[in-house]
Length: 329
Image 1 (tube, rainbow, N blue to C red):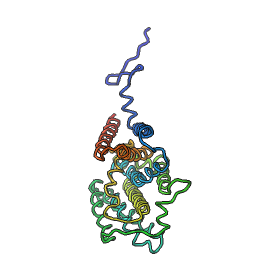
Image 2 (image 1 turned 60 degrees about the vertical axis):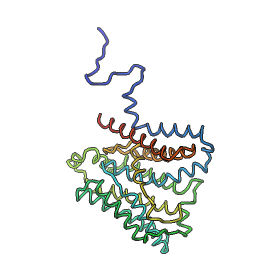
Image 3 (image 1 turned 120 degrees about the vertical axis):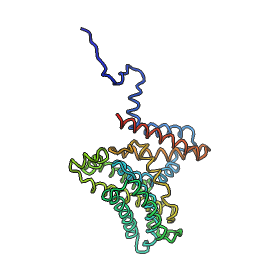
Image 4 (image 1 turned 90 degrees about the vertical axis):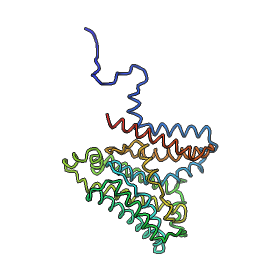
């Protein structure tokens, strides 16, 4: 009796020690960002002077912190098969609110900035969940309106910040690590826990995977969607607060400008598909670090910024294609 195995029609042939392209395609969306980040780090260790000095690493971490925080909220929104283009304007709104109320104390100013982010998120969520607008349309409208409100509140003026306690958020450290990095790390842990360990996280993924089925299963779709957009708005406000405290000034016309593109890039490169149903929090953080380090590497090695942008574009296309290939299987 012969010992034979048959391959079902249409199934990929099993690899016997050779290069398995199908396996690479399966693993690329999950581990590709970590491999790329490791390769880039090794490249910098060899070719970039003073790369491992803490002063350089500190600069890279501090610069990427706002993107990481915004990307965490963006990942949740994309997990529901949505998008939030208003995050940059929310950062600007928070930046405009801080100097207006900082005279009443740091805590009231921060709370009101967060309330502004929550309000924009609530409007976004309401337009998506109850009015039925496409997320890209709803949040595009708030992208314009949010920055307009920020410019009105600030009278279009550049505001310097002199409150030492507030500035300490962006400049001081704990155990040698900047406060802003600690904040981003704690938020990443919280978002990761929410996605993996809570009912809300499971509902969020169910909506992104198959919204009609989620409705039939009794998932409170509207409530979850509104909450997701509120979280995104609040995290964007946190990023705006951190940015103001770091640079010591509030410029509503520039803070958060185009950060929505950086956040979406970090999420997609990190392995979260734009089609929803999956959120990779650690991958999102790694994606933000990869994009930041890629730009810094190009600059350190005297390459044009346009070259970095082209490389980033290629990475985004590969990431989106890999996620699409995985989704269609």
